Length: 66
Image 1 (cartoon, rainbow, N blue to C red):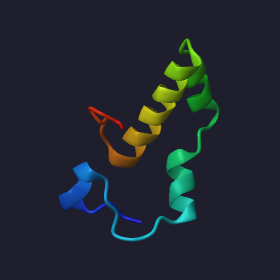
Image 2: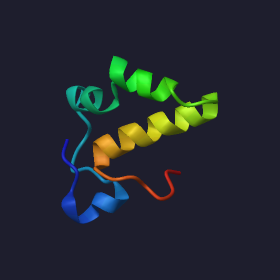
Image 3: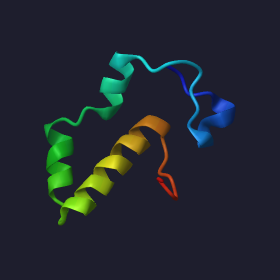
């Protein structure tokens, strides 16, 4: 799985995702969990976790993650 450079902003990939690649991006370890738990409110923690894996995957934050 490799992000196509010309369409990086759109988040398009050049093939189906591989399990190992997805686990590397979306697995939250103890350090990630501690960072997330430091935020108040369940909805804030969920949003923070989503932004964390987004920046890990795309290398940037999205202005509108929806």
